[in-house]
Length: 42
Image (cartoon, rainbow, N blue to C red):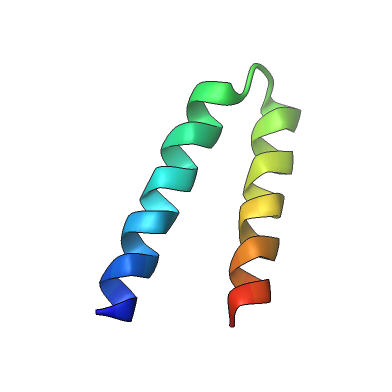
């Protein structure tokens, strides 16, 4: 159950970050922040 929730959350973050980024640098920043969020949860 938790694994499915994490997968859904990760997909949502990827979708939002892809829609919100205007530059390649922005994509990198968003992926970095998403990775940091996952690290904080574990």
